[in-house]
Length: 210
Length: 241
Picture 1 (tube, rainbow over the protein chains, first blue to last red):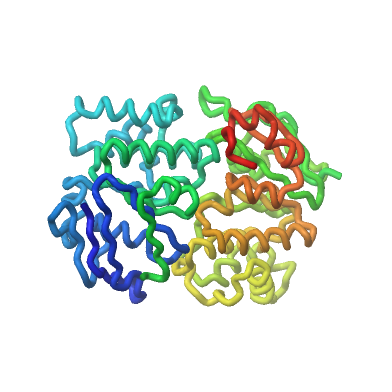
Picture 2 (spheres, chains in turn orange, blue):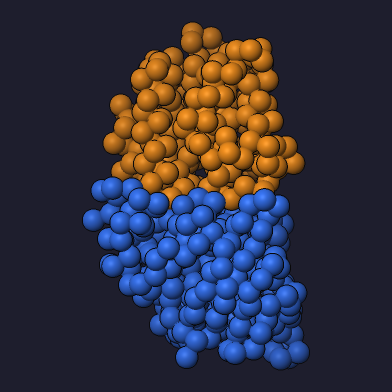
């Protein structure tokens, strides 16, 4: 489904990833763990086209995607839930979720909205509220929900459990597992290796760019 | 003796009552944990104590002096400092310069020794060797330490930490735990909001549980985690041993 062939990425002058390779098979959950600063986020940003790679190639569903714009990559069926809950604070909760589905027809997204609201009931209660007024953990839920709204074939989650209560964290991991069973391929970057590996088919350790 | 006391604090956001009649006291030198579901009002309580928000009713006392409705910088000068969930360093300044900015408020007291004091603070949090690096080049764990260093630079008597362990690796957590333990042992009063229960159990002497804006439990960590109300609202069954 996804293949990275010996990619090398520089951040400013610093080497962030060196000859990193990975494959993520269809309908499987691949967890990427490793210390902070190892290049996990850079890896995800390279896949979605936000970071140019200097060497190597990235393949998705048989097509080479490195060099494409993020917009083209999203259209092919990849979505990302970024870390640090980058939601749109001046838009409502509902608008944030609709942005996640902007490539799709409105009538199609009703079911997906329901799925997100089932997952995070608090988002339904607060759908008219400005996203910036949500608590930190609620913003994290919104970021995950928004990534799901594009019905991705490959969903990339960058530290989805950050700032969530133990109960909510358990729910989120359970839900990620369910989403995978619905046929979505998942790439999960997580600091909590224990929770991530419990639901993963495959685990990769990234250390200092390798 | 209570160094910080919160009495009947209530805060509304339009229709939503974010904090409902919350009261608690923290003794000098104590380390108190605040836990609760996402959106329960924990950060709002910090925002009220530090003057970022004004309560509709209730009062806040620091060493028996009322500080309700003072401005954030006045409250800092009285001795209450805080960190934020998302780190917000000055990215293009060095680590040392980031600490010198809050130290500027102490320039008269410290005379010309701002830098000396800044380095001392960096040593406390284990960032001394990083002092000349640009803040934007620091890994996440060090940014969290820098956030604490900047709060410490204001020489607080009470330090409020908002999810300092979020997003840290196990090694980084262990390092930060050591830093906070040392601060606590040196006599600093600490209130910590955190979801990593292992940390709360280890660091705090007393835990306050907030749910839907109200205090639903308070006590030693070992007792609180077995409270059914807390398990239902926050921990989930089987989450903590």
